[in-house]
Structure formats: C-alpha cells, structure tokens
Length: 150
Image (cartoon, rainbow, N blue to C red):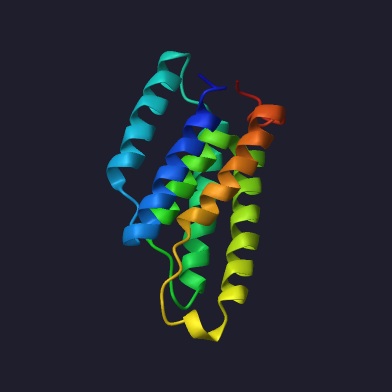
C-alpha cells in the first residue's frame, strides 16, 4: 500500500486542480474518497504510521499558516489537500510538494501582474504540480528514512 499512495495522491490532486480551476472549490468528497481507504488499509497493514500523521499535520499547518498570512487567504480545501499530501508523500515528498507549489504559485502571481490581482488564484493546480514532484521524491526515497516506525 505504501507504494500506491503517492500515485493515488497525484490523481486526487489533479482531479482537485481541475475542480478548483472551474469552481474555486476543492470537493470534500474527493478528499474523503482518498482518506478513508488510505487510513483503513494503513491500519489493516499493521497500525498507524506516526511519521505519516506527523507529515500530514506539518503540511496542513504550513498551508493554514500561509493562508492566515496572505491577504487574499487560502481556502480550507487547500489545507486539507496539503494534509492528504503529507500523509501520502511523507515528510520529504510533502515538503517538495509545498516548495514546488509555492514557487510555481509565486511565478503565476508575478506573471499575472496587476491586471489580474482582483480575481482569486486557485492554488490546487500548483499543489498538483508539486504533488508530481513530491511523489517522485517519495517513491524514490521512501516515506522518511529517519523515521523509526515502518
């Protein structure tokens, strides 16, 4: 199951990016459709992975903090998607996802310029781009080589 989570998360992130571009919303049903089986299989395979939960909490808190600091704000769907990414990708994959998403989001914001600053900029497409990079890191290096559990 551990090797199936990163590609499954990339598919989830791509779906959420498409939905966010159309409606500026990330569907909770899609997040639940990912989270419930991932958690169930993880528990059935031998219990909770504390490294996964810590990565989910760290990624979610990082996005929540970024949303609180920004003027335009960030939707809570982005925070939940980031937390799901933390769980699926582990620490290194999640931080890669967040770094790529932040960098590409800043570039898009700069390119957009003054003419488009009134409108909202959906963040899920940038998280999806970061998810691809984070999944590559997670599948190459594992969840967290410093982790003492699983």
